[in-house]
Length: 289
Image 1: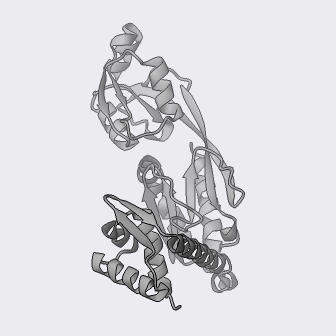
Image 2: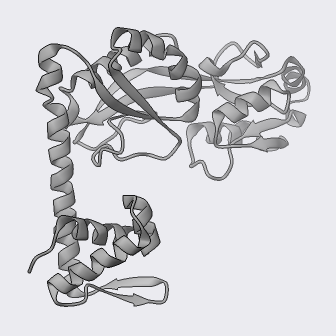
Image 3: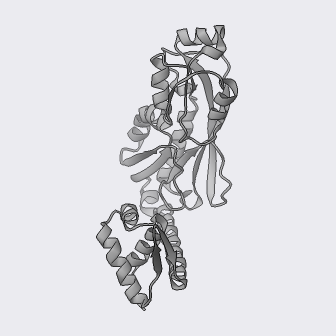
């Protein structure tokens, strides 16, 4: 039985996505390509791998075995990619950093904290290509969806290495009028908060505890949007120190919340020169928090 890697890869993507179109989006190919590859795989196996039942996909016993093999091949391919990246002797030998490094972080940290500080890194290493993957979604470092990630919790996965960057301090802040209203009639002060798409994090817990009865005028997963709304006078927002603009006052000199910030990467990349350079730059940046 002959089964090529692309057919196995497409089969695993089809099972993950649950549809031809979803698998096509994952792999960046067409719907027809996925269908053709799965037909070729079943022809090679000389038996069906799955049965479509309404909106569900049920694997046959052979399909389960083939999926297990495909998963193992995926992991071996990722391991090879990490090993090659971690042993980039060309970059190491010349002490010349070049190539792309994908850094995953929230939109607020990436847009308003790290991006303005990039010139210092790129002046030192002009051949370095930094890509920021912004959002709250946790990208997989094992699957190389990102090379490096900034996270507010230290991971427990033994395959990941975490390096503490510093402490991010959050302040309840707003325009002078809204701060004055908070001090005068706390329960009437309007708030800016998170929408339902953000999981239960310390920021949302603090707001739920200290402003449960306050009117919420605006909600967003984006701290950048929350900051702009607070600056426009929409309401009070719990913002990190690096977002405190001149238009904003804090309700107290002391922070309302503190969270540790970690740089996380896969252990196979620990010797990668460009990753070490970006880590050193991040430590310098976070000294300003």
